Image (cartoon, rainbow, N blue to C red; front, side, top):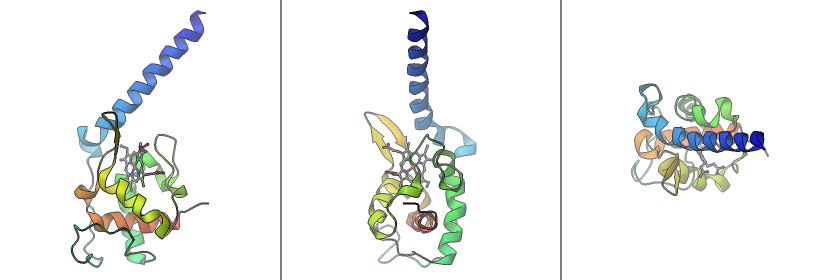
Amino acid sequence: MKKPSLSALTLFAATGLFTATIGTRVFAHGNVLPQPVDTSALPDITPNNDTWLTKNPYRGNAAAIKIGESAYGQNCARCHGLEAISGGIAPDLRYLDAGEAGDEWFADRYHHGSARDGKVYMPPLGDVLGQKAGWAIRSWLDTKHQE
Ligand code: HEC
């Protein structure tokens, strides 16, 4: 009887640690602060870069895909996995709906993050990194899409 209850306790502790880590990691340590993304090569978003669109204005734009790949690697990969292949701590973004069908949901999470019951699962990054960087990441993610 000792063994099962011990492993249940370990699992419980590990789960608690996991959520606590996710919540504080991004802003607590210098090496994981959001990394600014240079989007000056991309067209500005009309009417202004702070009015959030629900459709990707850069889809298929080669410059956006390149910027998005690097921005993803610096800001998202530590949770969502290198090359968008999740290691299990956050959803695998290759399976987001491709194209317009997935744009609004992508932008919502990117902009606002995700929190429930007082726990931050994903920090809001949209106002930190900017909308242009978000759609660049989305453009790159579309090239990694899997059914
Ligand atoms: C600190 C870890 C962390 C970082 C950094 C992070 N995310 Fe997330 N993200 C998560 C978690 C955890 C979820 C699941 C949230 C939930 O269950 O409510 C998530 C969910 C999402 C979703 C919704 C996925 C779905 O299948 O519904 C998108 C889109 C997303 N993240 C995009 C991004 C992008 C783009 C970046 C980088 C700019 C990023 N995330 C950075 C942890 C992170």
